[in-house]
Length: 304
Image (cartoon, rainbow, N blue to C red; front, side, top):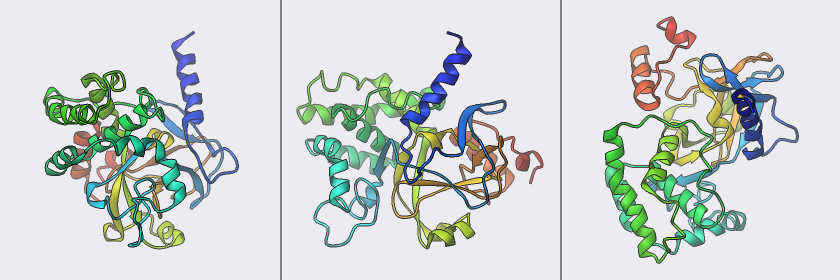
């Protein structure tokens, strides 16, 4: 089997792994290789400005530590003050039952305190994924299809403490070596490398669906970060400082991808990974330090 055929077969299989909701037909897009940025998402037909391209549920997600008592532990919907459980509904409680029962067996206070004091958010996603694997709700290879970041030796060294805390938390809770056999240091590093550049910071926008569409770049003041999540299909969208598509969250962690302008068949769909209002130098610095590439979109090449 040729490498090209294997690559195409892998991209086709992505659709079977993507949890797309709210659509009665396949989305008008396909994942294929681009000449400039590896894998990308392309329109299979003309997409009109404002059109909902697709929605997506996360593979793995976790609320921020500051939001644990404010949002649903599963879907991030704002909780009512009368909620006694960390879920907004019986449906969310049932969806999270498998991994949540595993999480409840351990005391996460030391792990959470370390993440809080160090300002870490990605280890929380690894914690959730590990609980899903132990509960047979995921496999250790769940994120392998995603592109990893390049980690320096200094970054890997800094992961030692959080990794040991995660493993010892499971051990102290009575989980056997067999149950956490997958949880090696190398597995932890590989998962973090993928989470670093594929994680979305979830900001629930305030206002109606139409209002957000009309002001595609919703202001920071109108949003509240409530957690982080990894998606399959949205992770294949490449970056552009002048994007033609936008990812947003209205009431929950379920993502909506919408067109910002008319997109022609065959055109690549791109989103902006950062705050597009920043100047050229600031964008380049953040994109290189955070995502490991020098942006060569039309806006950057024209130096704004």
